[in-house]
Image (cartoon, rainbow, N blue to C red):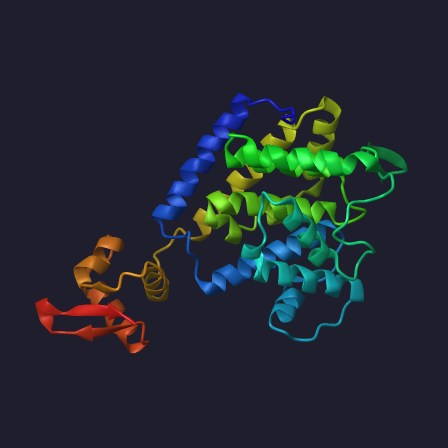
Amino acid sequence: MKPPYEITSSILTLITSISEKIGEVNAHLLNKPSPQLRKQNRIKTIHSSLQIEGNTLTEEQITALVDNKRVIGPQKDVLEVLNAIKIYENIEEYKPTDEKSFLKTHQHLMQGLIENSGKYRIQSVGIVKDSKVEHLAPPFKNVPYLMKDLFEYLKKSDEIELIKSCVFHYEMEFIHPFMDGNGRIGRLWQTLILMEKYPIFEFLPFETLISRDQEKYYQALAESDKSGKSTKFIEYMLEVIDNSLSELLDFNNRTLTEKDRLSYFVSLKIHEFTRKDYMNVFKDISTATASRDLKKGAELGFFEKTGEKNKTRYRLK
């Protein structure tokens, strides 16, 4: 059964904008960020997602944990971060359309934090806010069937990934399949769904924007609950993704450094090439800049140079 939602003009406008920005990201060679930028974005993602759940560690403390340094802080908060770091270090192991992988991820994410991590809840739950029940989750006996249906939608629907990822995120939060950790795995799973189609989402910390105004996130969930369909949440999440891509493009709206160009070119795995081939990839650099780049690349051992002048060629090591 297809989860209920509508495709509004706002959703169509946002999908167009996101698609254009993803094209721009690829054109600017930002889909393969430098290792340092990847690390920074991963730390931001972990910090933002756990901050939404009440974690008190700072980005600096999370950076220290990523670097295997000791950190003084609440034991629970440190463990939450260490679990998340392991997840992101092995993120390609998790399969977004596989329910067993979903359960395994929750087990890894919540290990040592709750009993029965990686297992669906076996009791009723409700979300209470200001002494008022905001959301009463479906009966626990229905959870396995509801989650099975949701994964069937994910596997078989021909809907585009941008929408499917939002629908899964909302429906999973509505079902509330676990006793704890639903929010963080919902956001992580949306990332995994998007990554399969658009690799840039591994390095796009859109959760940072959610954490800046958490009330809008919860409001979008509540409005969708009230209407009985995920339309409002889809609009909210697509706007967050669109704004995150805008921030990425603004941050990277600068001339690529020598190191950026060399890292990207090596990732293309062109085994033999000339300076002209290099300049065909980076069309806005001068001949002199290309020569300096290639000289530096040879010095760093990325490739070796043979021949002289017009007959110079480079081979990837």
